[in-house]
Length: 318
Image (cartoon, rainbow, N blue to C red; front, top):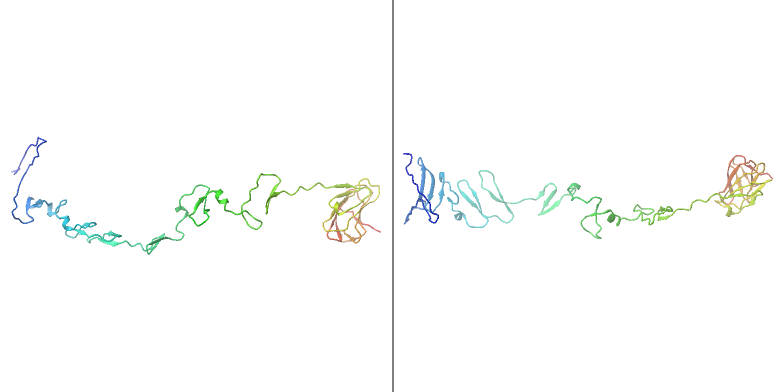
């Protein structure tokens, strides 16, 4: 026989609640595991329906919410269902902060306290305090900065670093001084006559004035106010004597012979000396007879004049 039970029906009215198989058992007393249905193959159960509605598959494996009564395992919020060695079990709730930890295959899971104490690479945990280790935060780990900015703090007190613009940076830097590095102070209106000094921007030194040339064919008596001038004997018809003022350090006079055959004669004040480059000294004076010959007399102190000259100067004789 290929078919022991072959039941067929047609359901064709959506208004009717159909039931294909209906069995109503009056249970006036039976064992709690009594079955409403037990389907077998070769004597082995494949599908069971217990009288309380619990479903079992092959090997009495619970199906869905059947087999094990979940409420029977407990009703405490936070419990976790797990498979034990022989049946489903419930793990009671752990304490706040614990984690669900597996113990590996063949062992039941447990609640465990999360332990983070110790060195965790770039972070050290101690007593619940997390501390970033020194040097662990590299530039690459920092937040990106806007272009042309520097890290700093211009808040006027302790504060988190800021990305400062060049204008903000210069606002907190010192201006340079004669003894310290710093910013160049504002120059104001640019001017070709301004120059930067240790005291700031100032006027350029006055341009040197042209050399004052004085033609004195008969010579002249000089004063300290004439210092820096150049005297010639242009137009002379004889010796042109030039009388120097009393020596005072820094005074200087230049002389050029511009009359052929007529000498320029430079005479020191009484008590002063003229020192020649050839290690000779005269108190009488120095003379240049050659056309174009020149010399500069510089007072080194209150007594001595030093002669810077072209060859040809000779000491005057009595």
